[in-house]
Length: 265
Image 1 (cartoon, helix red, strand yellow):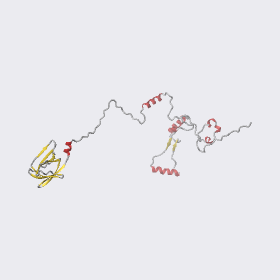
Image 2 (tube, helix red, strand yellow; image 1 turned 120 degrees about the horizontal axis):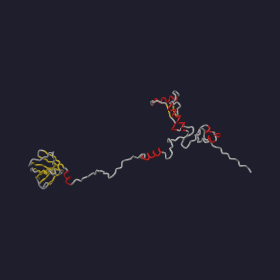
Image 3 (cartoon, one colour; image 1 turned 90 degrees about the horizontal axis):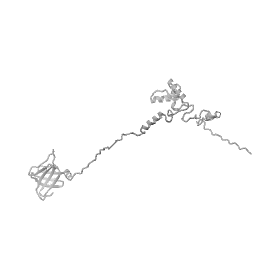
């Protein structure tokens, strides 16, 4: 019986210089470590809390640099000089070895205590921990983010609203507000007056003038011959001296007698 030919599978290797996920063979089979893992390019094994072997957690690293404040133009000049090699590079940087003694000691103690277990939240209290319970109670009492608490009014709330009131003028008010122009032509001149209305009858013409508290009112001399004109109407009259006042309506009336009773304007 012929033996079955063993099948071999060629494993595809990642491109050179590319970091790959791995690191497990170094623990279980160190003699089989090869390629990127042997060159130190493999990503170290991480535990459940994010720590990686041989690497200081990002939250525990120290970023130190020695610098001085300069203007933008000076910073540009120095950058070009360092590019040409005319100036040394900036001292310091990530995890600088030349740190102050107290900073270097703190960094060494942090790396010593890390031991591959890094908790980005600063500790893992056990369920039921008293400090954790108090912290959860404090968070529960705080208002939700983006919400603002406002006092709630208790009982009935009175609101005042202004209502615009529009009044319609009465017929009397509309009549008293109207104006027309009346001209009185005398022998030696003429005068133009602003009148409320002009009323005529068979024998006479009555002019209703607004009675002003501080105004000037013209009253012709009794017996004067006057031509009264309003718009396209005209009457030849004489003034007998008759006039009247209605203080309640703020009116002054001038009464003229027509020379010709058939002249109806």
